[in-house]
Length: 252
Image (cartoon, rainbow, N blue to C red):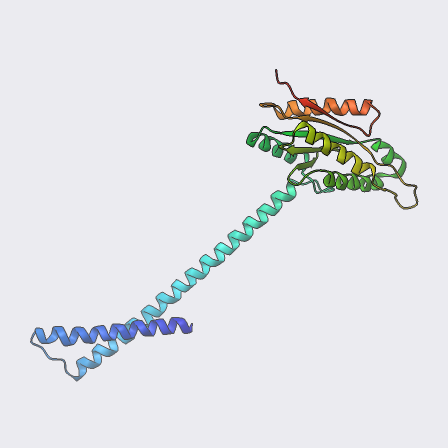
């Protein structure tokens, strides 16, 4: 309010000075004179009109600027909320990894930007026995341990997702077959080394089987999944707790 009064006062003073300058320059040129009453009117009229008019204008302008600031702040908060909701919707509630839909969308997006990379499918071994023998809450704890081990095994920047009940996916961006095999083996070891012992129970061994494929130029996500699943099937039939990564997927 003090700022409005100050600015309105300045405008009123300038209007008064302008009125007086016009009077002392124009009126003599027209052959007239400015008497006492005229001087009074030249001073009072600008003050009585310019001050309230400019004060109201400045007040409205400040209100408009404040409304714009509040609107911008509300828009920023809405955008942040939208991003948070979108991020939450893309995540698996239990593990915090990408959910199935978001993982495959991220995989497809990465494939469009670069054809290099490898896809791993990671499946927990004998997981149904854990649920049947110890209950689903213990099974959930085991899944969290496996998910943490997988996260430790991959590289920074790789894409992780939970794509099934006890099945996970990892897209290793830019990885060669040798690099993918090394990451898969590191994940296998990380899970195997987990010391999982629920309350009032003996230690439960945790292992995973891993199938992987290196991405071929032009291969679709479905083709990559089929190739990785074939290697996963080989790992399961080979006795489980194995990581098998194949060569380039042929799309012919």
